[in-house]
Length: 396
Image 1: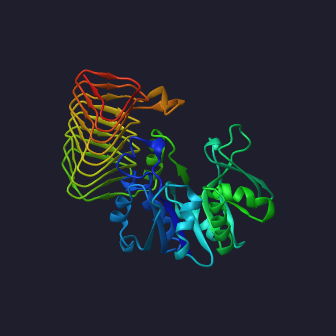
Image 2 (image 1 turned 30 degrees about the vertical axis):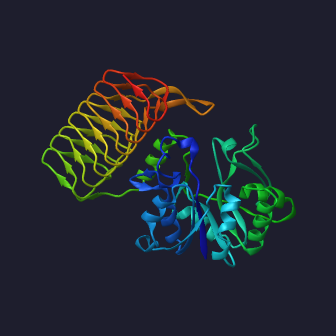
Image 3 (image 1 turned 60 degrees about the vertical axis):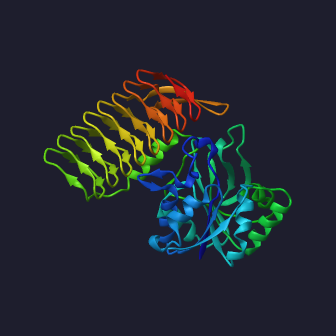
């Protein structure tokens, strides 16, 4: 069986973390989200994979190449304009025959998620799960095991069973998707909305992992979930006087200096320099080429590649994108906050600061809980940041 993985979208609501990468390439647990999807397919014996790419496609194609490194055989189809999932699937048509899986590339899943659908022996079907925020997805109404209605992002709460964006399709459904695209339906759920009253489409409930990041702060939970399945591997240099507890991985060329305390689950990439006397607490991932200076503490954080964090900094439930530079004494505490994305406001129970790539932060800066700092910003020493900063903002 083949699989089509839809990976062409940007993920606009996740800005600034999708400025230079598509959503599927955001690293959680030091691996792109899409890599977890590929691994889940391969672990179920599905090696022939068609990746539909579009926004910043070169970042995907250079990382995965022909798929051999990941145990897969990857073919690419390019969606030049992001016109929806149905349109994306139709572009992959020439690579498909018989039955195949359709998988969204921007959700964190595991092998059990895929096996639940592959193991169902009832032909074309839809994988569903439960969600606490169903209004952000396609809400599925089921009678017995049959899908009877799909409401895409309904305004009111009509149920909590949602489509995962994972399907088992055949050539007939592929033709129906093509017809739907010709009729102006851009999403797969929009096509299925019209079809389900006239067909028998089973809903298969998954017991596997399915986690989506819709907004920037969601990356904290996705990262924690990714780390929960990481093992322990120490490949770097651990000086005397370092304490490591729980599941912790340390990449090659990394030095953990004396007096540092690390409690897993946590992962630290390659070529890092940590400490001395730094503290890394559970559910924290640190990318490659990161420097964390003495007496700094990170708890439940996602730190990407080539980040420098000066001494005496304290970050909790925070995200730092590639290339962020912090002088000394940054405070990015977790707390209850109101956050804004576009015209939507959200009350968050526990969140720190969210900082875009290439931002430079001076000494003694405080980033208030729930603040979103854009890419390429310059923040002077002693500043308190509250709310959102657009890309390339300068605050002195």
